[in-house]
Image (cartoon, rainbow, N blue to C red; front, top):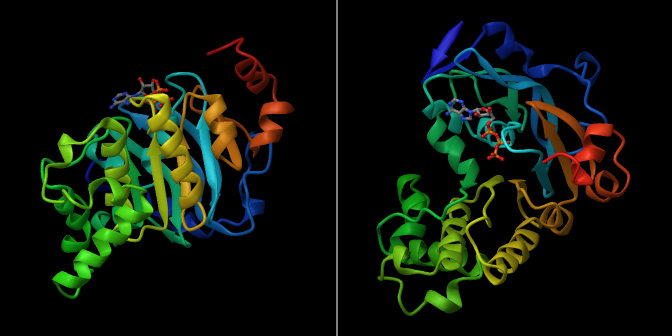
Amino acid sequence: MQKHLGIHISNEEIESDTMSKAEVHTDTVGDIYVDDARMTARKVDVFYGDKKAIDDVSLDIASKEVVSLIGPSGCGKSTFLRCLNRMNDTIDSCRVMGTIALDGQNIYDPSIDVVPLRARVGMVFQKPNPFPKSIYDNVAYGPRIHGLAADKAHLDAIVEEALQRAGLWAEVHDRLTQSGTGLSGGQQQRLCIARAIAVSPEVILMDEPCSALDPIATAKIEELINELSAEYSIVIVTHSMQQAARISQRTAYFHLGKLIEVGQTKDVFTNPLNQQTEAYISGKIG
Ligand SMILES: Nc1ncnc2c1ncn2[C@@H]1O[C@H](COP(=O)(O)OP(=O)(O)OP(=O)(O)O)[C@@H](O)[C@H]1O
């Protein structure tokens, strides 16, 4: 057993990286596999101390798709999301078992440096959390620490492109030196998205990114997610089934730490195969 920043993984589990489809038994209803997997989670268990929060979850994330994670409060959506870029490492009582691979490489392997990992698998949180720095420096932060810009002109171009892609450039181009924390909530969230995409991630994780926003700001973020999915894989936790239906191609329903059902979003919402999914979708549990 090895321990990395509060994460325990057995050597056996690290080697199980190459588990084929046939080797994974799952109770999840629906197809956990995709043809063009960018990330693969296999037999993932997560414990906080003695308490099991995620129970035997296996799921593929395809390239350039939006996957929604839905389910009742406390079912483990955020915990599973945070496993995908080792954000749970920051919680000392948290243990992650099983394997999660990005482009075939186990992200829990001891050789993995979490700093570049979290650039490749970026994260946007529930509450917009810009750094107390200028708008420019918020976006330039990642490219600077990862040495992505050859010179100042290159960095300027990266910052502009990220703000353009996040749909914020027109609103902030003439006040880049002002503090990011002075923007509106919706603008701050788009700034956080610009910060994430400035380092050219492969996957973006979003944990209820619209829950602190009004309907207009929410609509802008949803439009942005739709545009970004042409380039990135996006995994989003949402409490809004309408939002999941609007933005995601696949939906995964969690209940008490288990992945109960996963499928095409329209199928999960119109014709759920599992009775627990059906109960949640129809508002009988929540
Ligand atoms: N840092 C932590 N320490 C201990 N237990 C935790 C911690 N974070 C989450 N848990 C527990 O793990 C379980 C799953 O929580 P998690 O936040 O992942 O669920 P969720 O589905 O995202 O919930 P919500 O929709 O309310 O945000 C819950 O029982 C929760 O109390």
